[in-house]
Each structure stands twice: as structure tokens, then as C-alpha cells.
Length: 130
Image (cartoon, rainbow, N blue to C red; front, side):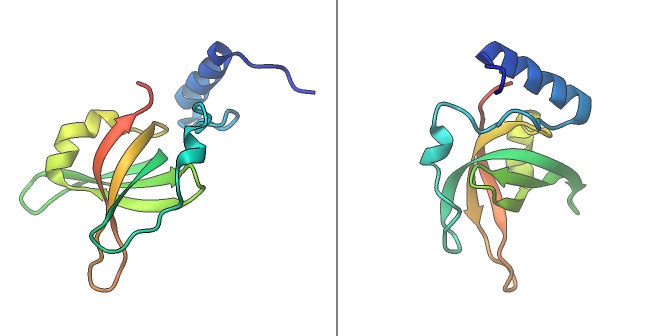
């Protein structure tokens, strides 16, 4: 038997875990009123975009040759897909304060293949909280 959790207690557990270890581990971060069930696995051709529900796992900030800030961000989708993405300078300046380890957000990602390698770029972000 498990102890029933209210939304308030789930939020407190998530906050404590995020503050203590940087990620939420005991509460399903994608448990958002069935929204995760509506998401589809990543499946798009080069140049196409898709909205995914994802949690930011790691962020590596980078300076471009011109001195602009950008980032390489690893996300885990609600379909348990681990994806490495890039956030270009203009977009990074726009929503860098919304991107941090552990945040759960809807991300509009674009597939952008380069030199025969599949790549993904975050085009837009809408955090679920914070």
C-alpha cells in the first residue's frame, strides 16, 4: 500500500528533490492531467517541427565565435526518449531563464540534419511551472 499524495504534497516533494539533487525522482514529473498521454514519440523528417513534453536533464552553455551565448541541452521526453538539442543564440537569449535542470516544459523542436547527422533545435519553450 502506498500513502495517498495530494497535489500539494507532490509539489513539496518535487521542490525538495529539485533543490537537493537537481532532479525529481520520486514523483512522475509528467503526471500533468493526462497531457503526457497525448504526446507522440519523436518522428519527423529534416526541417519538420514537433511539440514534445520534456524535462531538461543537463545544460551546457557555449559561446559562439561571435561571442553570443547559446546552449546544448539534453532532454528526456514524456515518451522516455533522451534527446540532445541545441538552442541558438537568439532563442537562448529569449528564454534562457525558463531553461534549467529539472524544469518540465512543452518544447517545440525542429529536426535539423547536418553532415549526415540528425540534430534537434529547440525553437520554443513553455514551462509547466516556475
